[in-house]
Length: 436
Ligand code: GAP
Image 1: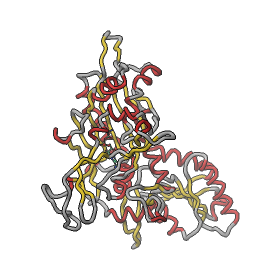
Image 2: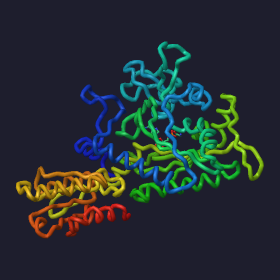
Image 3: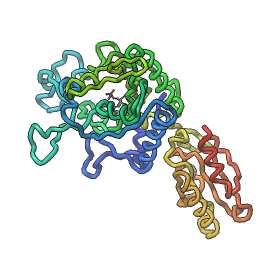
Image 4: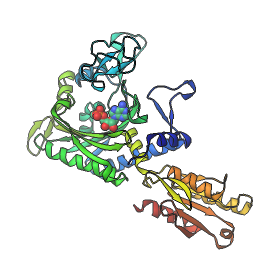
């Protein structure tokens, strides 16, 4: 059974992973800030994704497109016309509901019983204005997906990098949606981050690539520690496919509230490139010089949410144990994701030589990875603090360290201790951290 969400929310607040946005003003609905440890975790998740897709493969390039784009992008992509939820308003309490989230055919407000308006379309994009004058010409949207930044740069990347199909473009970045059904912590936010790949293939090879990408992405979550039994694949029925997709499979995770989408892998066909070619008047064809033919490539799109991945990694790694009759909370995060890689804990904070040695070690380790120094409690408490934030290794410096020049390294998961030469500590930890 997954952990209760209230425990995760409480840990996130208490230990500085996630805070409600603008909390001192009463909070901003469904907008979240990542605290010091959350910022590290999120960076590590994105880094693990980037490494796996851009560095470890030779067929994907990275991109960092702007959030603001020409408004015609969103006309061409279909978002202005179709990126909408069907909503009803309560005439009495003024609350707004998604029609697919209330009882089918109901005319009564699920909250207060008041009468509901007729359903109407509500576009999810945030609208703003660019420039000095607020008129129709200056309309801009905060992007609702990062994908379009990739499509409009398709030719730029092909031309500048001389790429041959099949190849992909990867990007991580913010996306914005004026979500109406919110709640479930960071799961559905109005400002969130995506990690998306648009993988361009020859038409006819798309179904094979689609199946490959579903497996590839499922394996990534398992590689970074999500338990297999908490993941499943769900293929979309024809009537739930997005307006651009021929097929889509969701990777779902067993969140505390239920099985929910973590990432979607869609076969977007040539929908987007064709639409942008038509609207912009530019040719977005690819010339295959070996086959001597021109075509608009098909696109397979693995599209994941950074915030949802962070939440799933937190939930999946959370465990409570009883050790020597005491409760221990552990985040068993994959070492590559752990916000802090090692903590240095001097056992005697009143012995200058011990403190100096511990500070020296901390400084040395800092050049290699994120280290925390803590001497503000008893050793039992210090260990518990580090377990709770998922620090894989704790290094203690004691009075014997002054003579034998060794320190004790404690492993988060096994709690086994190893005595290690202080001069070899950095290499020892790097080896362990890179091990699995
Ligand atoms: N480019 C395709 C696309 O955007 P999507 O299924 O709407 O597809 C992809 O979004 C991923 O983005 C989702 O699987 C989810 O992880 C994340 N996502 C979407 N809306 C979100 C929201 N409101 N809050 C957090 N993550 C969200």
